[in-house]
Image (cartoon, rainbow, N blue to C red; front, side, top):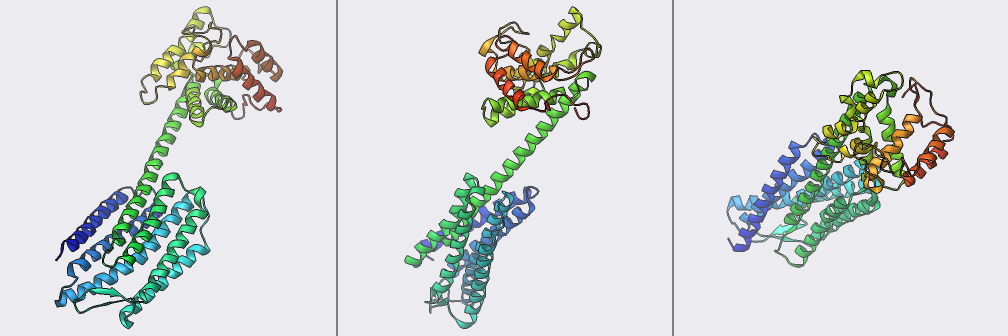
Length: 429
């Protein structure tokens, strides 16, 4: 056996091992997307069979024994058959990803590709009976017949159809999915061309393995993104539950944190902040009053004006909130809104008396949203402000209590709210 044969056999065995490891990973994460995982498992399994069959084909090539006679024929047929199923399952995986991302089913293109694949499989089976596509010489080595190019042409038509499906649904694929699916589609095509022009240099199964492992990376990337999104939803639910627990301490401010968070989000959007900044402001606003957990219920629920001593106790809640949220080391920015939402633009706020742009923009946004909700919510000692009164107060405090730019954004939001819906509603908070 020559060195080239040993190299081919080694490549095929290692390819099979890599695909087996990938399949184990898929099984471990099958809960992520069962249909997608099933398609990928078929891809990996068929490729493992193809790798092993190709290894046997190289090992028994030229072997004149009875075992060699049968093994070369079985293994070659298996490799050809697996290549057709790889096209089928690869297209199936692509279509499932597209559907999951919001695309419609490819329809006629997919049906045409499936029909051609099954036609090729049928012709391949018939070739073993009627002796076309490929044959074996006296040294038990296979060679292609002229009719082989029919099967190759039909396979390339399927590849072209898959490429068309990819490009017609381009917008539904992420950047990494685009790269990996195009690799899956073009790499085996290049390998076939190389194999066609240089008989004896077969890298098709190796190219298939590389492209399928890239698709496996797409799956794992999707699973990682799914896990991250799940953790984000869990975090958002925990923050929301925490905010509701805070509001429950004060019967006069039920839903306050949620409303302030929503107003803060609207302000951040008006200011043209990035989606990441908007999300961060929203979470900060949900927890801006977390320090009230450390304030007596008697003070929080007092029906009337607070004494100076009680007011000083209330003024401690930003520092207490900051101390609580500082313990969340994975999201240290959460404490910003809690600590500085009572700072004033002119520097007369609390607890640190910082002013202007020294106050983080998130805290300046929450300050306006918090004050707006205070005016548009009823208290035991006063009713809800009229919209005109709220607007006048925002104008009056711009440049002193509020950042003028953020106050201007709040005014635009107020002016757009012609029915005065942005306020406390006792039927739903």
